[in-house]
Image (cartoon, rainbow, N blue to C red; front, side, top):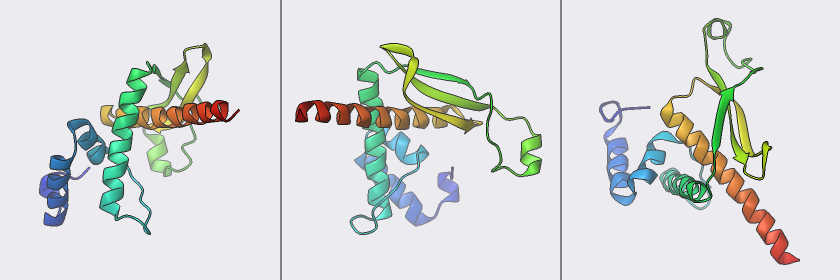
Length: 147
């Protein structure tokens, strides 16, 4: 992650503007999460702001729904994307899942192959998994409502 000293004036200006527009939680995701944008309807900055807001909302809704995140070692990680030199080094490779409260053996959403995550990356991963689980729940509710 770039620090303010290492970013351009334009980058610092965008970050300062985002800080004024976003809540502290949204700004955390603005700084730490990836983002996407539709080149036909928004700028990259608009997409970044939208994604930060969406992840912050997913985190909040996930907390309200009582999502429990379980982190464990990935027993069989695929590190083929690393160079030989990188693979020779020690790495912490984890899986994260949202435990289904109705069936502890089932996951509402999960991801494995998470390599050397720091605390910020873990939080982003949890918000992304919450977003996925919420989207699935919304779809199930819409399907039930349609019948």
